[in-house]
Structure formats: structure tokens, C-alpha cells
Image (cartoon, rainbow, N blue to C red; front, side, top):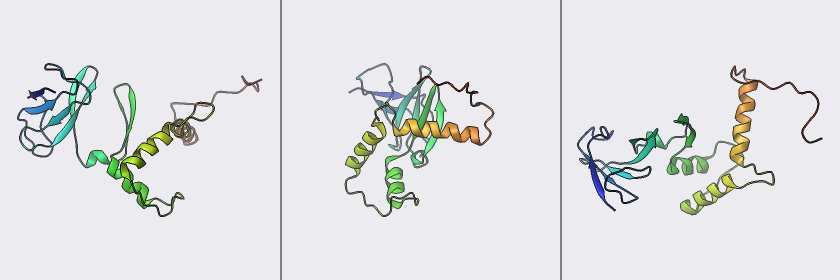
Length: 160
């Protein structure tokens, strides 16, 4: 895979160097950057990854702060992210949600199984993620959100 030296990715958050950074292009391109290409600071070796928004490539540098649970809008997508180690730690220490004391024996297998469960569809096609998003909208309405209202029901349903 080719490695490109790029001087417009901005300063590294670890050493603040704006020296050209090395980008290993996952797709083997010698001229274009793609989402997921790995960036390494040319001075200290700190890592990051290329993200592409509105056809512009930027570097999202790895940092411990980036490991915390984040929910936001990037471009035209809802993005929910959390670092693997932060997630594993949070699950093991729990928050009184009924998990009790658990010990994760195989971290990579656990993460694979967790993602599988989050993507697992019920008979109607919904997942735990769908349910969480629905509940968030219900909470918004109950908490007085100005951007959404319940529609008035005429007493008939599509199931009749």
C-alpha cells in the first residue's frame, strides 16, 4: 500500500506539529485519500484516520477524549461513537442497570457479539438501536421539544 506525505491535514494534537504527515492509503491510491486511510504524524507517530465529509478529507486524530461516548451530526449522518476500551470498562463497572458484576473474558469476541446483538432484528425488522431512537423521540416530546408533535389520531389505524 502506498504511503503519501500530506502537509495540509493540520497540526497533530499530541505534538502540535504541522509537519507533513504520512498517510497509508488502504485502497492503494497514490493520489487520493479515502475514508479509513491511516494517518501517522510525521514527527511523533501519533495516529489518526481519514474521514471524508462533503467530498473533503480531514484527519480525525486518535485521542483519549475521542474514546468517550459521543452523539452528534456529521454532514448528513447521525454518528454515535465510543472507544472500545471505554465501552468495555463502562460495561464491566456497570451503572446499576441490572448487569451486576460481570467480567469480560475475551474482549474482541465480546465486541463482536455485542455488535451482532445491536444489529439483531426482531420479526418486525426493528433492532435495539431503532428502539433507542424511538424512545429518544418520545422523551423529546414528553420534555417539551418544539421541533416535533404527536399527530392527532382519528381513531382509525392502518392495521384495521
